[in-house]
Amino acid sequence: MKKDELTRFFNDQLVIFDGAMGTELYRRHIFTNRSYDEVNVSDPALVESIHEAYLAAGADVLTTNTYGANEQSLSQHGLSPRMDEINAAGVRVACRARDSRDWGRQILIAGSVGPLRTKGTSSEERVEILRRQAESLLRAGVDFLMFETLPSREAALEARKAMSAFPEDTAFVLSHSMPDGASPEEDIVHRAVFAEDGLPQAFAVGFNCGLGPSAMLKIVEQAVKICDVPVIVQPNAGSPTSVDNRQLYLCDPEYMSTYAVRYAALGVRAIGGCCGTSPDHIRDLANTVKPLGRKRIEIKVAEEKEGVSLVPERPLAERSRLGAKLASGEWITTIEIQPPRSWNLESIIEKAKVCKEAGIDVINVPDGPRASPRLSPLVTCLKIQENAGIETVLHVCSRDMNFIGLQAQLLGCAAADVNNILFITGDPPKLGNYSFASGVFDTDSIGLVTLQKHLNQGIDLGGQKIDPPTAAVMGVGADPNALDFEREIRRLREKVEAGANFVTTQPVFDVVALERFLDAISDLEVSVIAGIWPLASLRNALFMKNEVPGVVVPDWIIDRMKSFDTREEQLAIGIEIARDTLSKIRSRVSGVQVSAPLGNVKTALAVLA
Image (cartoon, rainbow, N blue to C red; front, side, top):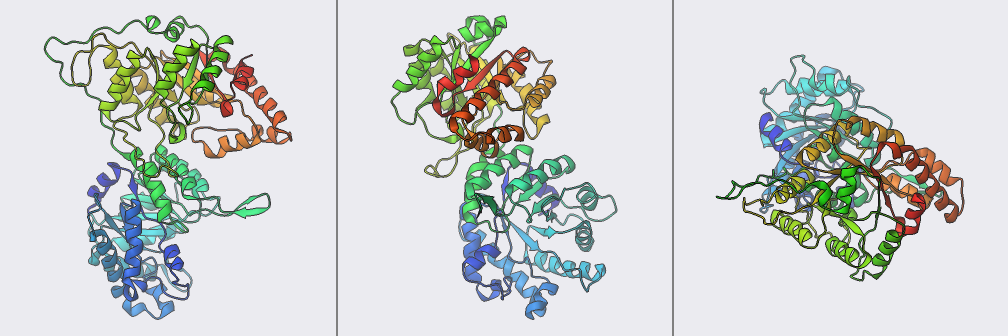
């Protein structure tokens, strides 16, 4: 394929690469004394089965089993004269897997070209070795070349020199190996890949091998600021971590997918795996992040029918008690309570009554946090309002319903007098007991606000009259700790422009980060409700720090929690830290939303006491 075609392919979706080939061959008893590339010829069915496993897992790109199929590497096995044969077989096997059935999507074949040893060879010799393998792969029919695990600027430069022998629009990727502690400095990435020196330029830049998902995140944060072309990330399955004097490999598929979500949020256009990853990793990754890369359908109301026109929204103060407080600038307190996993709401209603008696303004009810199935949040809100006499804020996310279902949900909210709604895009479905679940994501939180705004003005998506109009108070979420801070602020501005009345932030532990966020949106006419999470224990703090995207727990908090031995002492410190945070931010926000860790509303109320 040509470079411009591939650029469009990567920009139009989040592309999923396959995982490790060597790991899978070893698992199938191909030991390290053999040439893994020669297996393309001696046992092509085995290689094809691995390719098919990655395709079944959701990969959009198959990387040929030709990482070491260059004359230098093959010479160790006496196979240099068979270089063309082995590369052609590698491409043929990948194509056969691609064509074995209709996978329901376009599949690309990337020709893998691994790094060369520098000892005993000149730069000119290495360029020629790379050129001959590239020629062999291109002749066999790959869609693009993938120069993998490049160890240095010089190696990237040699790959580009090798590509100068081919037509200008021949597509290739330069993927760098990043050892622990390395940084994608501009000299390594930008100048080596995109220098205006007359040499061919890659259509994308990649980072693979050397690092696990967590360490690779630090590379990605810097790389997306440097690179103006699609970025591809392929971390290893991880490295051992010392836990209680045990060496544990923590990179299970879900762990890797958690970081893949963060890569996608930063703007990475393709994600896969390197050493140690398997089809299981790719399956979890594809199910988790693929929906995030879809082009969102822009909300566009159909042409108004004859006699139908937009009407003014009801004044904010008349929509709900929360709306009245927002309009008057009064201080607002909310407590978040998750819906139960069963249908029994007795405990939730009792907790809501306790909050009502304590003077809390509203109960915040999330929708499937971390994509976990729970009782309908709308039913939860309805029952709380009916039986506890306190208003609720309902989360509505775009993950589970298409436009028809979403519009029905919002009309249902109006009918149930649930008029405070927080619109979120939603967490992608996870694996586990619900690995078969899929995300819809017809739109995102910006589109949801736009949809509700039109319903408030008396028109549905089909341009038909809604009489009477809905009267929802519209809230949105924001992350003061967002990795891509500029994108977060830009999207928040779009949400407010669409009609949002208030913003609720992710839990705040770093006051400086919140102040930076507030400074960035100081010109917006929108109320900010800060999220507060009283940490219940050291274990809770570590979980929030390591496993919950969008939450930053500073090291000083972890150190302070470690200084106390019992859960009771740690909880007391967690409440004290939350109170201190609240006192520091109170003058700059319109209110707070305090989470109830493990459903304990008494902990949340202690913060507000």
